[in-house]
Image (cartoon, rainbow, N blue to C red; front, side, top):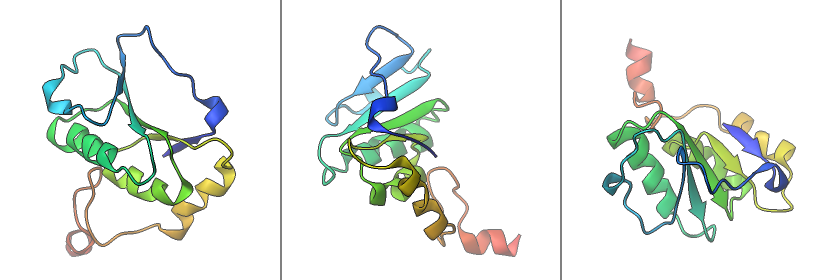
Length: 127
């Protein structure tokens, strides 16, 4: 997962290949033809609807482009974001991107499958 500082993120408004979705939009109702990037917003860190949107985009709709987390993105959310399909996370203003990368060292393997790696750990071990 790529981690961006707040200042490194540029909001794109006039490019049809980039969509910015609010949390109340069902991704299944959209045409994704020609879309290369989708920005999903976390208005508050306690609002997890963007996790569901990312999962739907990856697993059910097969979206292969970039899914970017924006808004109130905290370091402790990054691993869950990666497992639900996000490629890029833009940290909340004031957070350090180098400290955020350490989260992936702390949690490097999982028993369950995810939106990105669907095979559970026990199935990998058996193969």
